[in-house]
Amino acid sequence: MMRRPKPDTPLPGQESVWDYPRPPALDQDDRLVEVRFGGVLIASTTEAFRVLETSHPPGYYIPPDDVRTDLLVRESGSSACEWKGRAAYWSVRVGAEIAAHAAWSYPDPTTAFRAIAGHISFYPARIDEATVGGEVVSPQAGDFYGGWILDEIVGPFKGEPGSWGW
Image (cartoon, rainbow, N blue to C red; front, side):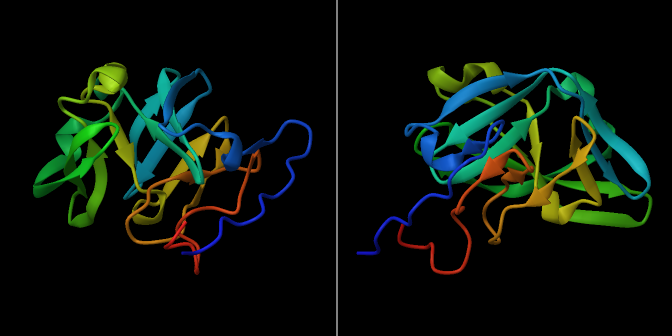
């Protein structure tokens, strides 16, 4: 069994992902959250939710009314989260450009996550740019994870090399 890494020490104004709860929690964020792909603003909101989970940078969930859902294409398949329920996946299509499996949602989440029903979250590594409060997001490492890393978040983060057994 791999040992849990020693968390980085957050500076004033920063959060450590090792202080986030398990099971995860929802946190409403009123900063401007924007997503761009193919030269188009795909999503823009000041009503996003963050999902805070131990060892993971937050995922941001955007209300469907604030997403260009006409540019989303539902993909086959799904996955199950023990906390949030069954996820649906979406690709983003702008003209001839396609970001395959670039987003996901929970159409019918568990009771604890009912507030994000139908909200869309995007993989920062699969779109052109995501910002929170004007800061460009860095993607969480790994092909499966969709966390949004900002200067205010410290790790180490799940998904980095050697983190599979955390």
